[in-house]
Image (tube, rainbow, N blue to C red; front, side, top):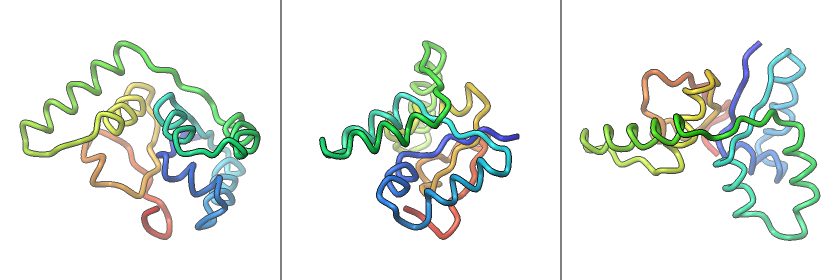
Length: 132
């Protein structure tokens, strides 16, 4: 069993019925895997959600296993951003927090934005059918 942490774009596509993402996520669960959510992905989803979409969004996200933030995650995210900046790579703080969450809990990140997550130690499941 693998626990997958979908990047925000995966949640948005699934909620909007695009690219077959909801069905694809359901298939991952039917195969015996777990789906995760963290503070950053949750905040990003709600930041782009219209008020009339709240019930549907709440219901959908309630099926995901919650992985909380911690001091260790914040520290790791800050170090990732700092270290990559020294290599000339600018990463967003939100993406480094998502990556740090996946690394800290041993989750596999699902994303179509591989360039936002260049960390070789990060387990990534690329999105089928391209980026979101």
